[in-house]
Length: 403
Ligand SMILES: Cc1cc2nc3c(=O)[nH]c(=O)nc-3n(C[C@H](O)[C@H](O)[C@H](O)COP(=O)(O)OP(=O)(O)OC[C@H]3O[C@@H](n4cnc5c(N)ncnc54)[C@H](O)[C@@H]3O)c2cc1C
Image (cartoon, rainbow, N blue to C red; front, side, top):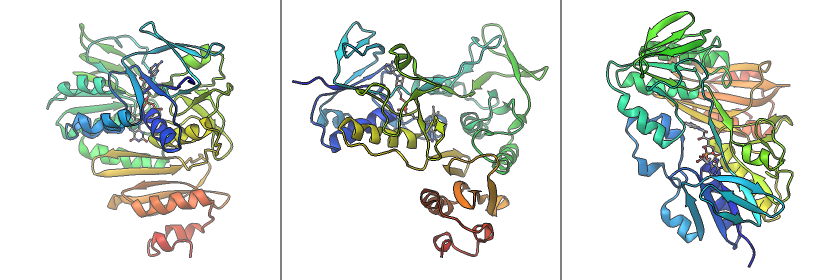
C-alpha cells in the first residue's frame, strides 16, 4: 500500500486541500498535522466578530468533525512537524513520531512579526493570530480602558473598531504617514482615518514606537518621544511566513516558500500553499499573499497538481476587511503609479476606487459597494479597458459598464 499524502499545517489551505483532493478523486491515505489544538478554522472573524463576542467559537471551524472522518483524513493536532527528510520521504514530529509520505503539502501559514523594543515582554502586550490570542485579549476589553494599537494595518484597525465600540479609549501608532498604506490607495486611507477619528480613535501617524513601560504589566507606551498611558497594547505589525521547515530541507525560500503556478516546490513530491508561499502573480512578478482567497485557490491548484492534473493558478486576488458598518473589498493588485478613478461618494460611505494600467482595469477597492466589487473582479480577470469617465459615471449601472 502506498504512503499517504501528508499535509503540514491545519489551517485554511489544509482544509481546502483535503476537500479538493477527495473531490478530485484521490483515494489514498491522507494525514494532516497541525500544531494548534484545533482542527482547521477561519481566522478573519478573530479580529472582528469573534473579538466583539458576537460569533461563537464553534462557527469558526471550517468543516464539521464528521467531514474529516468521512474524508478518511487523519488529523494529528497539537503536534509540530520539525524536520523533512526528503531522501527518506519522512517527516519528523515533535512527539517523537516520524511519518512516511508519498507527497507532502506545506500549508504552514505565517506567524506574527514580534516587536523588538524595550518592554515588549510585559503582560498586557498582545498579538492576534489565533483563537488563544483572542481568548487572552477579550477579557481585557473593558469600558474605559486605554488600548494602544501598534500598527495601522488591517488587524490594528479592525481591533481599534471593536475596541471603541466596547468603550475603550484607543490610540493607534503608525510609523508611515497613512493607515493601511501597504494595501490601499491614499484616498481609502484618508477615508478610514476620518471614520475612525469620528468614532473616537486617536491616530499618531509618522510615529515610531520606542518601548512599553510598566512594572510587570504595561502601563504606558513611549512613541515619538512622548509617553501615553496604556492599560493594554495590541501589536499588529505584519506576519512572517513559516518557511523554516522547507528551508532546512533545502527547498528554495525567499520570504516565503518559492512555488510555481502549480504550487510545486523544487522537489517534485513537495507542494506548498497559502500564506507560507511566494508565487509568480498574474502580472508576472513574485508575490506573497496573506489572504483566504490565496489559501483556498492555491490549495485547489496544489491538490490538482498532486494528482498530475496541472492547471495554473491565475485567479484574481481578493481580500476584505470589516470595520464598523463598512465592508472594504479589494480585488487585484494595485501599483502606486496606476491611474485611479473614483466612483461614488466617500461622504455617503459607499464608493469604489478603480485602478487602471495601460487603460485596463487591474484593481478595485470598494467600500460598501458590492456591484463595483463583483463586476470589477470580472473586468480585472478579463483585462477589460474602460474609459475613466465611464467608470466614474454612477448613472451607468455597473452591470452595463462595458456596453
Ligand atoms: C486576525 C486575522 C484576521 C484576518 N482577516 C482576514 C480577512 O478579513 N480576509 C482575508 O482574506 N484574510 C484575512 N486573514 C488572513 C487569513 O486568515 C490567512 O491568509 C489564512 O488563514 C492563511 O491560511 P493558511 O492555511 O496559509 O495558514 P493558517 O490558516 O495560518 O494555517 C497554518 C497552520 O499551520 C500551523 N503550522 C505552522 N507550522 C507548523 C508545523 N511545523 N507543524 C504543524 N503545524 C504548523 C499553524 O500553527 C497554523 O495553524 C486574517 C488573519 C488573521 C490572523
